[in-house]
Image (cartoon, rainbow, N blue to C red; front, side):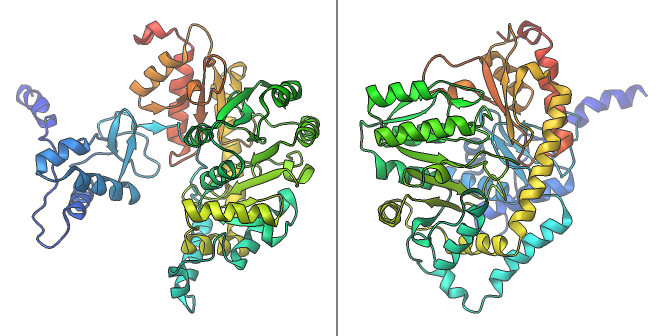
Length: 473
């Protein structure tokens, strides 16, 4: 017995993993991916185990850094590994697994605002059939060519069908197909503003919009808001004193606070925007998730509104197809010129898949599944966390967590990072004023409910104690 105990520590001291690159004709990056696959199958690499950094592995294998970066990117695409900024790269746990082989919990990223991934076999089969449909097209070559800017008539009609529950059926010459909502926001900004112009938005807003405004040299004016949304009086003052070119808002299940602007506030904002000639960029990323949303700005003021909605939050995060509806055909043509100069076009194969899923009902089935799972995950969060800390809605993919004293956002982020959990602090969203002591917690992505429950329990346990208990300040 004594001899066995003496050998146990040495059994755990495994040599550092390195992939075998002896396969002659295969590119080095694929050999690395094969090495990761072989290591997982043999048990040499355990779920949740940290891999060498890309730079370290490149040095050990005497390869270019870009070769290893390409290998890790391909391994992520195949679902073999996950990466968390600030923590490293880890072997991905199998579906349903919540711990590494040595009993240590695998990392859980609650920082990315993604829909829950589908796990219903019938829905997954419908999605596969949609992909198979592309293979059966009579002239696949047509999808391998450049398409007209703004999408084919067929793809635009699919967009109209997808948007119709929110804004009716706009004319086809007002809608453009875009490679994701980010590109649509950028096109609207570029079309409406010049460097130095002012754009109004909520005092806490989507970080992607902040980045794009900075890229365009646009100054943001953050407006205070409450549970009903933007304060109309603050918007009126900004219109008088700042002469903004546009108002950007994420009016339904807002990112990050899940606030939905009430109909009364929307009508008040529309009246002010009309009076002062201010365009509205309506980023309705979550509009289809809300069960009874107020009327869209595009319905209340179509002549002012650039309406943007996509499929990434409502169908699948990797389906980078979105639609923008301009006030009229002339403004749509200006947007098309901007797309021509920046992103050229949405990928025809991706647009064709989106069109197929919209036409055959797969997109609606995915939306329904996401709503069911998002609601269940919100209920789980409500059971584990004090409701006094949370600002959220039942259908939202995330919630806003206001921290109890003596916790600060930096201390909580540090503790959660040490526990393998990622969240986003309020600094990323703050346009004006001091950042509040709050974080955004996302409930979707690849993590299943067991992993999510473990992460939320860690969060709840942390907030029940002082930061000093965990050695953070």
